[in-house]
Length: 169
Image 1: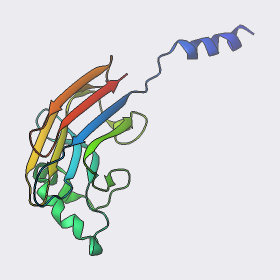
Image 2 (image 1 turned 30 degrees about the vertical axis):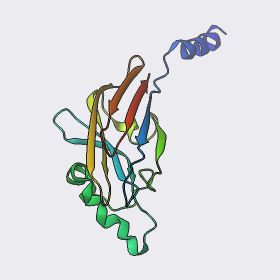
Image 3 (image 1 turned 90 degrees about the vertical axis):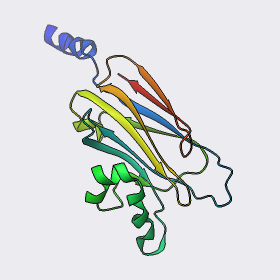
């Protein structure tokens, strides 16, 4: 009878190893004559800038004959590191462009791509490119998995607004 009591207590006392990464990306309102929503790529890289994992790619999925895919190469850094080797759309990564405003996404350590991410130092990279517009890239360093809550912020100057990264153990 003692063993039946000890097992639940052992399970309750062991830490749960679920962590998450919460990200908010602001797409700013620009006062321009011809506005197009930006394409955005979000990925993780190692300190040497090698690709670790793709988190999201926002692009025009609905163009006839997959025409939206040809503009993905304007996300230059992402394209060189990962994009050109992918067959788009990628389930769980690809989605439509986003309108002006703040957009939040959450990634859980029990799901891809964080599930297989080895512990270590990384950088979250957010790159945006817009037709008849500019290109911008922001990087935020962090350690994975988090042992305590971490909050990071970066501020874009043109194609991106504020980007917030929160890591929860």
